[in-house]
Structure formats: C-alpha cells, structure tokens
Amino acid sequence: MLFNVHGHPVYCYTGGKNFNPALPTAVFIHGAQNDHSVWILQTRYFAHHGFNVLAVDLPGHGRSKGDALSSIEQMADWLIALLDAAGVQQACLIGHSMGSLIALETSVRAPARVSKLALVGTAYPMKVSDTLLNAARDEEQTAIDMVNIWSHSTIAHKPSCPGPGFYVMGGSQRLMQRISKINPAKVFYTDFSACNAYGNGEQAAQAATCPSLFLLGKKDMMTPPKATSTLRTAIAHSKTTLIDNCGHSLMSEQSDAVLQALFDFAKS
Image 1 (cartoon, helix red, strand yellow):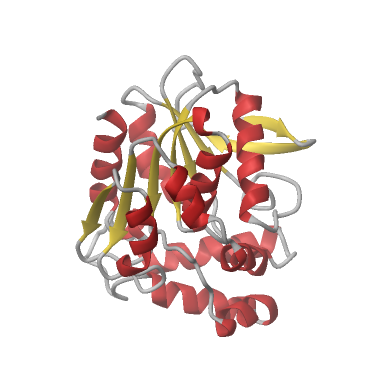
Image 2 (cartoon, helix red, strand yellow):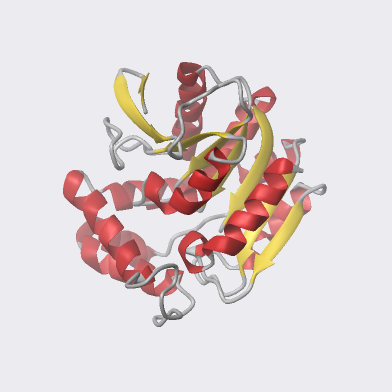
C-alpha cells in the first residue's frame, strides 16, 4: 500500500489484508539496510488475526522513495507523518535494531499515538565501531559480510528452516545487496551513522509510559542483551523476553518464537 509522506511515495506492507484503520494497528519498523520483508511471517500472522498492519519501508529503502534520513529524530518525525497519512490515531510500534530507536523516539515525541512499544534486538547507546562505519562508507559489500557474520548465531541453521531450501544468512545478505542496488547513495552508512549519533534514548525511555517489551537474542553480538541495561532500567515497567539460539537477526533465526512473543504482547 502506498501513502504520500513529505511529498514522496511510501510503501507499507499490510500482511496480505486490506488496510483497515478501524482495527488495532501494529506498525513494524525495520533496521539498517533492510526493508519490510524482514517481518513477513510476523506481519502476515498479525494481519490475519485481528490487527491492521503497516510494515514500513523507510525512505530510500525498499519501495519507498526519497533520500534515506540521516537521524533517528528525523525518522521518528517521518513515522508520525506516516501515521497521519494513514489515518492511524494510535498504534503498537514494533521496531528492530535501528527501528527500535525510531519506535522509542516516536513514543516520546507523540506519546498519545503509541499504545505499546516492542524493542527487538535493541541497545542504547547503539554505537557502531569505526571499522564497520568505514566499511559501510567505503566498502559496502565488506560491511554487509561483517554484519551477516555478527548478526547470526551460527552459519549452519537447522535443515529446512523455516522452509525447504531456505538459507537464513544468504537471504539476509541478498536483501542488503538489493538495497544497495536500488539505492547507491550509501544507505548503510547513513543508517549506521544515525544509530551511532542518537543520544536521546535514555531520556525517551524515562518518559515512556505505555506497556513495553524488550525482545532479545541471547547470542546477539551486534546488540548484546547487556547493552539494554540503560533502557530497561529507565522503563521500569517493561518486560524482557530472551530467545535461545538466536543472534541479532531474530525474525529469521527464531521466527516462530519472535512471532509468539510479539503477538502475546500485542494482544495482552
């Protein structure tokens, strides 16, 4: 489904169902160098079980036009404008990695618009090493390779997971390569720089009043569970769920467990 935000077409996947703003709405926000497709299993289930779904492609990612935004604050303002364009008054925000920072910042900029907050594979501060930043700027394929190695708990996932012939690491790599191909403007570097520079996380977390979930992979090397301590302390009423045998790419490595945790939280 297409919306117009700040003069540019924006694509949102609706989970295979017609968009219906009268239903409770769940907004899914992807991470760096990704698009809506990382949420395919979770969004389809939500859409077929009582939720209105918007899985966004951020500007410059996937099918959405415009330049990639250079700060988390800009992305949060953009997300609020998208809610306006879609006619959604309130939504459960579900963000992965960079998307979790966007969701968090949105919750403090427009608290009345956020009914629940799910932070998946998050950390604060979300610092990016100089080595990875430089690779994203100068040798994008090297950065893609590095992130794929660090984002998965193993290079050999169980056979037929989640379906025959499915290659978890290969799928992630191809998606990142596709983002590079359709937008050669160094989106990876822009995304990582935004994560690295974001400094309002603790204040935003302290201001959060809605029900909140931290969904973390026990073997996450990109955003280790211990790196959420600042946010979890600030959101004292939050719940934390740790997923076994899982790295940073939670939605593909442990898709069913992620779905169950998110759906239980959204329905509670």
